[in-house]
Length: 161
Image (cartoon, rainbow, N blue to C red; front, side):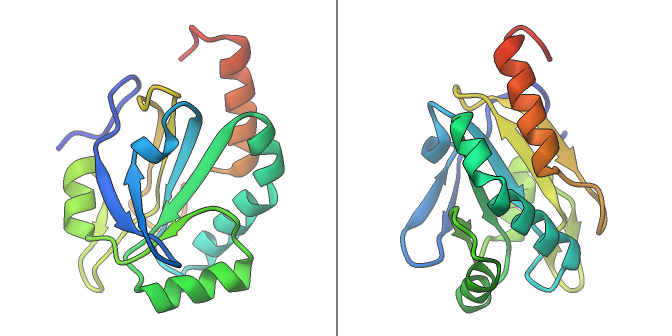
């Protein structure tokens, strides 16, 4: 499957959320700019740093009308421990099916052990992709400060790509 590109609709995904319920993407983000962070797992120091940075930037992102979600293949217990450790204040999904997510989004997959590589999306309020960042390894991912600047730019220049 080709990677998701600017203007394409984000595919429907349903992921269990830490604490109960399901994350329904892109519907849960509809009407707002949305950030979807697919992270490798709680064991990844780069993912921990990224998630913590987005948690710290949540007030600024909220002022801009941006919703953030994250998920990985980690089980619920592992994901819940990460949420508590990093004090994450946005929905975190767990137990994602790497094959299904990769088929829908074209995210890179590590085979052994089986997990999704870091992938990030910024969605417009109409649930179309405004930016996609695909990493085939440990580094290369959305940065909270860059997302803030990008959303501000889009607000000032709605015709911009």
